[in-house]
Length: 115
Length: 111
Image (tube, rainbow over all chains, first blue to last red):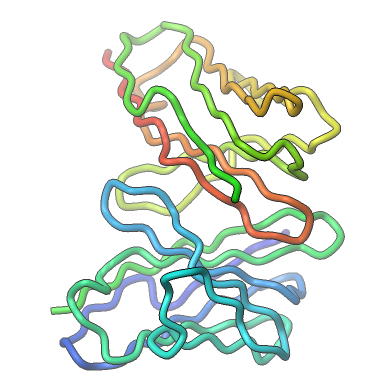
């Protein structure tokens, strides 16, 4: 149980295009999901907290207009990287809270390469 | 603001050695502490989760301890194997908040 999926696992896009990444909790409902970013040889940095039915909370230094987060249902959160640039190339990982356990379950990640 | 530090940043050992990875955190008011493994280019594999009321957790050759009052945790790996080579990440959270990660320890076990 407590499986989180991400789609796509890999995406290559041209500079200036937008990319949407989906994060799904497959067998549980998640009112809260988190989005992280990991640059090469660095650790995971929290980007934002996504709450179902409300606006996401962004960490300091993360542009909310560039990284659009939508959490429209209890099993799906999406991250859209708008007008992507090469510096946005990174590994994006989501996680979901299993209610009542305070435990986060992580998706397998999405590797984004912007050319 | 919570900060998580892991020492050493990198470690190379011969196969069979027992080793200890260290993690410290600045705010002792944590809810969970979790150790993860990450292979190059891959996602996270959860190894051990210690709740704030617990002192240690064990899984196979892995043992993690938690000293909440001093803000420290250790991950003990017994009889290391080449397959243990990976980056090990320590992370903590408070109730209802996201895990905050350290920068990791990259382990290399040679045969």
